[in-house]
Length: 492
Ligand code: TRP
Image (tube, rainbow, N blue to C red):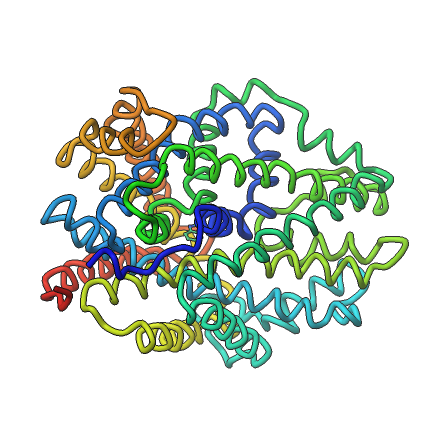
C-alpha cells in the first residue's frame, strides 16, 4: 500500500515545496511590520527564541507524523490515536478556508500585475489608494453589505485557481519541479529589490527604523505573543500542509535536518525581505518629506498601496519595478496556495481511495465557488475577518491539540525515538519538554488572551455580529470535522 503512494522526485523537491509553502505573502508584508512594531532589532530575540522553542519542535513533529503514518492529516492522526481523526479534518477544513481567501489576495496581485505595465493604478499615493479601495475592490463600507461582484477580481480568482490546478494535476513529482521556480524566482526578485532599495536616498533612515533595537519591549508579554504568532503563521504550521507533504517522503528520510533547513530558509527570507521593504519606505518618507513611521502601514495596505506608491516615485523604470514587485507577490504566494489545496485533496484521496483526477478539479471548483463572496464589494472585510479567525483561533487550536495528542497520548519520547532512528542530527529530551509543556502553554495562553480581547472589543472595529459569525464558523468547522471522522473510509 505504502509503495504505490505518490513520491517527491528527490529530497530537495520536498524541501523546496515546504519552503515554498512557508514563504508567502506573510514574509513580505507581515514580518517587517511586526518587527518594526515590536521593538525593531530587539524583536529578533523573541522571534529567534520562538523559532527554537516552538517553531522547529512543532515542524519536526508534523514531519514525523506525516512520514511515519504515510497519510494525509485525518488518516495520519487516526493512526496516532484512534480518536484523533477529527483533529486532522479540522486542520483540513481550516486550510481549505485559508485557500479560498488566500486565492482572493492573489487575485488582487494578478490585477495589479496586469495594470503595472501601464501603471494604471495611478501615479500618486492618493490615486493608488483610490484604485485599490474603489476601482478594484469597490469597498462597500461594511461587511454587512456585499454589494455586487467586482468582475476583475473574479477573473483574477479564476486565473489563480486555474494555476493551482495546473500545478497540482500531474502529481507531486511535477509539483516538486515547479517549486524550484516558485521559490527561486522570488529569491532573485528579492535580491534585485534589496539592491535597488539600498541604493535609494533615504534607505538608511528606513533601515534604522527596521533594526534599531528597543530592548525595553522585551518585558511586554504582547511582544512575545507576537513573536510566537508570527512563527506559527510563517512556517505554515498546524494546517495539515507539512503533514501531507512529509507523507510523500519515504518513511526513513531524515527529519530533523529537513526541519532545520526549511525553517532557517524561511526566516532568513523574511529578514532579507525586511531590507527591501524598509529601504524603500525610507526613500518614500524622504521623497514625501515625512518620517518613516508615517508611511509605515501594516498588512494589505503596505503591499497594495504604500509600496506601489514608492515604486512610482522611482527615478527610472518604475513600470519594470512595479511588474517585478507584483510578480514577486504572485510567485511568493502561489506555492503557498498549492500547499493549501494539496492537504484537502490528499485527505479525501487517502480516506476514501478516490481518484485524484476527479478530486482535484472538484476541490478547485468548490474553492473558487466558495471564494465568490470575497469578490463582492464587501469581500475585503471578509478576507480580513476570515484571516483573523482561521489563523488566530483555528491554527492555535490545532497546534495545541497536536501537542497534547502526540506529547501525552502517543508519547513524545516514543515519536522522538522514531525521529532519531532516521535522522542524522539527533534530538535530545529537550524536545519532549517543548512539545509537552512550552508549545501548548504558549498556544493556550495566546488563544485565551485573544479570545478575551475579542469578546471585549470585537475584531478590528467591525460590528460585534461579525465576531459571533467568526466564532460560529470555527464551531461549525469542528462539527463538520467530527462528522467526517465518523464516516467510513474506503481505502483498504
Ligand atoms: N506561511 C504563509 C505565509 O507566510 C501563510 C500560511 C499560514 C500558510 N498557514 C499556512 C500557507 C498553511 C500554507 C499553508 O504567507
